[in-house]
Image (tube, rainbow, N blue to C red; front, side, top):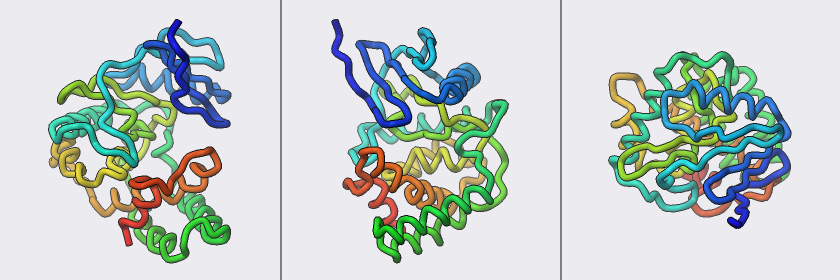
Length: 250
């Protein structure tokens, strides 16, 4: 019998791997429903749904390897990063899914959440005041009107698989929905700024990709993630992770 590998586990959800099958256990049925719906609509390679029995979703493994991970080296070539950019553009150009996703929060709601989180980070001594203040200023550029796109909502590089220079699968769609396209581009390149030009080359220069907004999303996403990561057993202070991303904006 294949060994059971714990891919990720915390109080909200867990993902296990048994051979070529991934078992996602999620107490929030809405997230599972949204993930299955998004995969059925996305015009890019996604995992095959093997079966569903709430609260478990079984998915087939996708071929290839990831482009890397946050805090680790990139394993993909510039052409592979460009191919990922092209796949992201194809997703963003697709017909809109029926509801907002993680990247589609309103400016007012997002700004209120960020201000509250920055206050907690400073009051509890989690991050230095100057680091929080500077990145809160950088994040301001994300608060602007945007045209809704079909967004993944959690497009970490660990969620994109390639074989050579071809994208073979994009996983973890529970945060998908209508949202800001630049949120996806920023999430994908967080911690790997050196590949942003490759991604944009594949994404296409016929659309406006505002680098200040991508920088803003790097800061905003990192500020919102630090405390959650600590509370769920992850280390945002590890080299190349969220706190280093914040320091890079100083």
